[in-house]
Image (cartoon, rainbow, N blue to C red):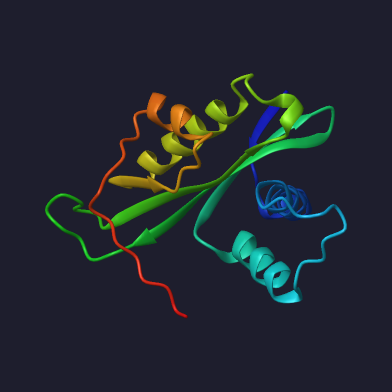
Length: 150
């Protein structure tokens, strides 16, 4: 098993793992066709976005992925760098789950986020993922609010 921080040269691996993950977590059929926009924007994000992606590879095949997205907001007293991170798309193929793969990918990304000066890491947790994130030190909060464009 190999864990690697993906580079731009790994774009095809990043894209295939992201599209696989989206099908599985959204319970989409195997022949589901993504929009050109989603593919184009995802590809552009991997190539040009402020992010780090970790790939878990077994026998030359990607079996897990996780990404950390970075954003900068105006610095505050509690976040003096203004650098925040958001953990997302943590995915391990079903047959590889419960082996510590997601934990290792998350640990690599958390270490990277702290080294980049992030002062906060957020995430959106599924019910299945909560125990892992709690064991890594994440805590549920009630302070956030969100608005979406309709």
